[in-house]
Length: 139
Image 1 (tube, one colour):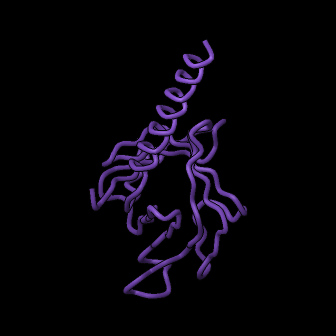
Image 2: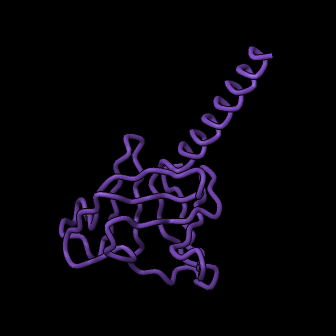
């Protein structure tokens, strides 16, 4: 009986771990902001580019507000995915210049509404969720 219980526990933990890893894998990429449901195509002049790296670091780039034309970083830090809450946490945030990605709080929460290897839909307020759409430009 104890062996079967341990086997079930191991299978559950492994499947739960692989599920959260696959979600993490979907999130890794270069995500270009393409707007909300109401945004008309071509309406966004200076979209943010959210870069989520496999090593847990992230960068946010913006051509209009970044200080360096070749590498217009406006923010950097660490990210992690919370599979229980289905959200991305941006931590250890360092800002460059006077542009802020949504808020200057120490830990920014991005609620994942949908993610594939090509599309990412997030919102920043769980109560009043306005879904923002991002496309993986390298995927």
